[in-house]
Image (tube, rainbow, N blue to C red; front, side, top):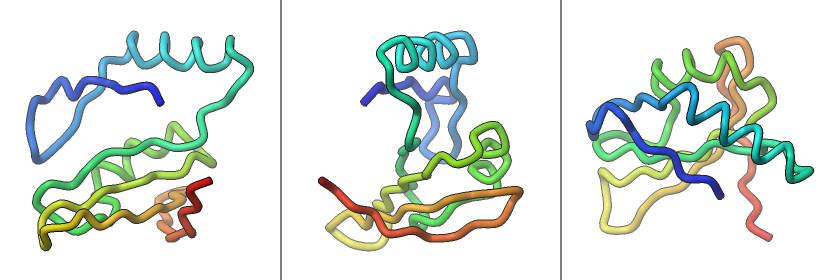
Length: 96
């Protein structure tokens, strides 16, 4: 896991520092791995990709999006999606 700071400092949207993100990706690849998933939380909505998520996903084909919903219940709700050319498909989240 490689945490990234939300530069927007907002519970409603996210913004990631480009150079820091590319440095992180370089570290992952140098370690012989590849980016498999991006995770974040939705603090005020269901764990379903927002338009911001869909727009951002265009640069990450094949990467799963794990979204933690914190809005409706005391317990977090976790969902996983593939987003390809704006099309959202929920996939099974398997924790090994």
